[in-house]
Length: 183
Image (cartoon, rainbow, N blue to C red; front, side, top):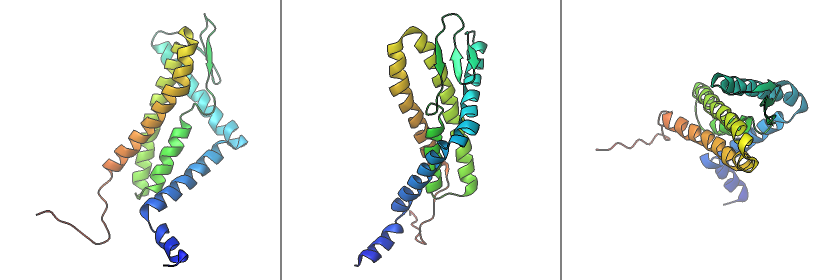
């Protein structure tokens, strides 16, 4: 078998197709996210909204918080956190969207999956921000551990769980004309 034939067969492999589409969409998403105009006009306002929403939840539950842009500050003890690009949950969503783009599904099914993913990832990210706000007031060591390790992993796991639940929700795919029926 020639190298050209092997390459053509390999590109027809569903696994290889998934991997290539996933990588291309993820790289494109990350590249778009760091374009200065997108960062200034999309990502930063999104993060400011995340800070504002987190601040509102802190206030609604009896806590103290002042929000200025992407910073949440405790008015009495002065502790503050700034939500930066990379802590917005957008990266987990980009990976989720790339997986859903690479997986064979209709555009409607993908849109429903993206909607569920946004809700799941962003809801957990609000919990993340609020928990870090409180943890940081009591222990810098625990804050660093939760921020750098625990929450990053949990947000990514959240995206993976949404992806796998979405796949299970999709109707079974028909294979190329071969139907096996159990007797």
